[in-house]
Length: 164
Image (tube, rainbow, N blue to C red; front, side, top):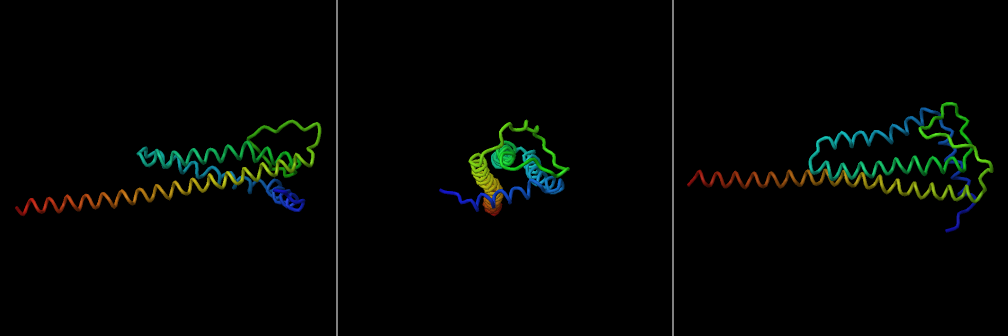
C-alpha cells in the first residue's frame, strides 16, 4: 500500500512530539508501561490454576509489549528523529554510536512502517491482556455459580435424608 508524503510527515511530527516531551511525560509513560506488569505479578502470587493460566499468559503478552517497545520503538525513533534536545531525556538503553552516514529518506520511511507495525502488535497484545483478564473474571463467576448450584443440591439431599 503506497504511503503518501503527507502521512510520513504527519508520523514524523507526531513521534517528534513524544520524543521531545519533558521527562515527566516520559516517566509517566514508563510508569503506565510498568504498573500493569507489577499488578499482574501480584495477582500471579495467588498461584492457583486461574492465576497460572490467565495471569501467566497476560504477563507473557505484557513482557512481549515491553520487548517490542525497547527493541523496535526506540530503535525506529532513533532512525528518523534527531537526538532529543530535551535535557531530561534518559534511556535504559545505551546510546548508539553516531551514524557516519545520515539515514536516507527510504530508511526513514521504512522505520516509520516498522514502528507502525510494532504499534499494531502492541495494540493486539494489549487487547489480548484485556481479553484474558475478562476471561479470568468470567471463569471465576462461572465457577462460583456452579459451586453454589452444587452446594444447593447437597443441601437439598441432606434435607431429604434428614426427613426420612
